[in-house]
Image (cartoon, rainbow, N blue to C red; front, side, top):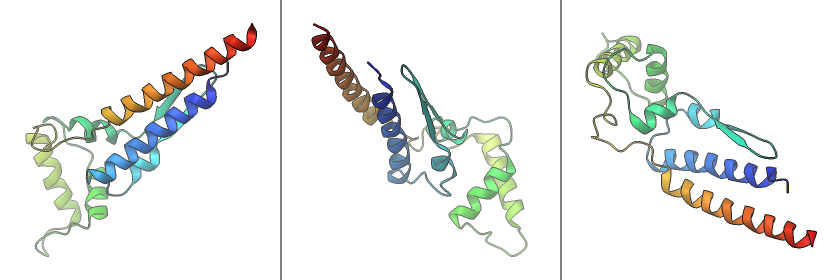
Length: 145
């Protein structure tokens, strides 16, 4: 049995879950991470690839190193955040956000806000995948008799 169509269907479903949950939880701003999702599958396996942002969306970022200023700048622009006074530039504002994250971590890391939650819908898709896979194998076995 060639399971590639089922694997591809599963991965496409998981991809959609990530994109939908980002929208539902208000995590999506520029759409870069959602647009980065891509799948690969063959007859026996598959992979889902995505941007590095997904880890922070799910688990947050612990205190320590500064996050990339360019990523913070992109986020500020996509959210339409502007400095309160004319003396502060967007880059300075991005630095202030980055410094706070480096010192204290993000709200998701500190459990003040829920991270990207995908487990339940993904588990349901996996159950459905297993069921379809079992049906396919049963049909193939019956056909061989």
